[in-house]
Length: 55
Image (cartoon, rainbow, N blue to C red):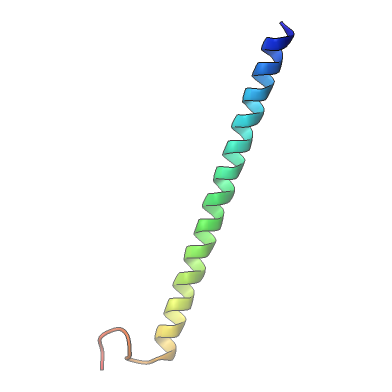
């Protein structure tokens, strides 16, 4: 009985931890892609007509 309770507590803790880490990873990836996109657009605006095909 106690072992089953321990197992369910361990499983629920592991599930919540995995969900938390997954959400944190997704948030980090979103922030990284957003910063990369803003940096690329900033550099494209800074170098006018150099990298986007317009000469």
